[in-house]
Length: 476
Image (cartoon, rainbow, N blue to C red; front, side, top):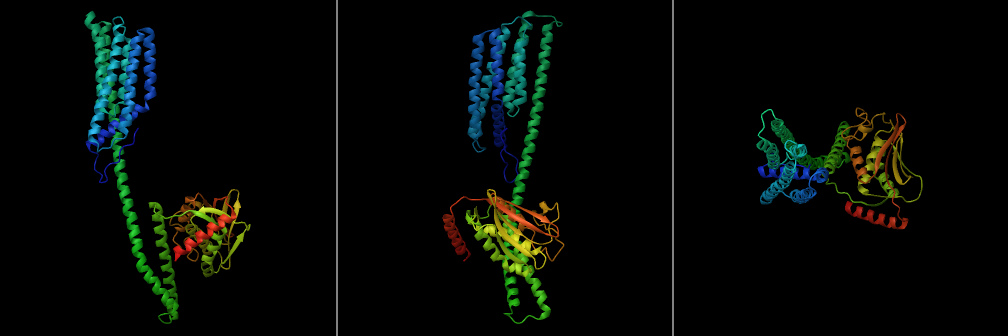
């Protein structure tokens, strides 16, 4: 069934034109979906009646039905392209649908009556059953457009009455006759068909109302999401300005540019400086998350020399590792240049998150190893520490937002809890994977894997130099 058009942004209910368009879209979509089922029924009817009655009448009936079916397909394609604003076109399609409904119903009714006229009085099981099947099909599958359903049921009902009343009119039987039994049975069948059509109509209307409510709720949720995104973006940017000023002032105080800092204030200044850095990191991470959700994060894909990427990541994090009294070393399985596709600045961000976590969760005087290797057709970049390790069953929590393993341990757990979640989204954007292996009390190995590019060493080095030059200019 065709999807319902989204309601207005203000949550107002659909107007009559939108509802009518939705009705005829659902009606034509259902007609298209049941096309081959109807063809099988019509073909079986044609073959059966052609064998036992008149072949020419059967072929004429089937030809008329095929014309109506072709018209239904044409109308279904036209209706699918309509919008609620095209009122004139909607009205025209409604008129054509009703005209085609009258035409196909007339063909079915006249054919059923013509078959009945060729039978002896009271022996009309075949045409009556055909009419019943057609009416039941309409009651079950034409409820999306009420007027089409009414037209079909009315015409089939008239044909029912013509067949049974004709016998009573000719024979003038007593009330105890089987002909009157046929008449009252037809009346009961018509009541049954009307009741079925009302049941399906109510179900359809209930589903429409529920879908409209869901779409209204969806619009409200979208509005709330947009408001939340704008709020986060505005607040984060507004916080950056005073935070930059505070951090700059603290750095000046720490450097002694405004005078020597008393010993009693050293710890307080140091603590304030660390917390300002942590807050700045949190704001940057929140902005990254917001950009990812909104699809606004700028990512440039180029060929990247993995060895150069590892060298740069180590150089960027030497100071951080030293501050945590951890040694940062590089490990290579081969001197061969390995190339992947990605954004160098974003992948440096990923490796920085991995290295900083390794340094924070390592024991003092530990060693953090950063390296790369080829694993099958992929390149693996890993960060290995000799730290506290990660408990089993924590995999989801590691990559969840605002969560940290052993977050109560203040010595190790400084951070925002967003780094690995952001890293996971960045890595997966480039078709990579991120995971870890860990043993409690021994250490952890975090690694990312990307498809290996098969390029010549000379060409790749040339492109890498160009990429690094562009990054340097962008940094300036």
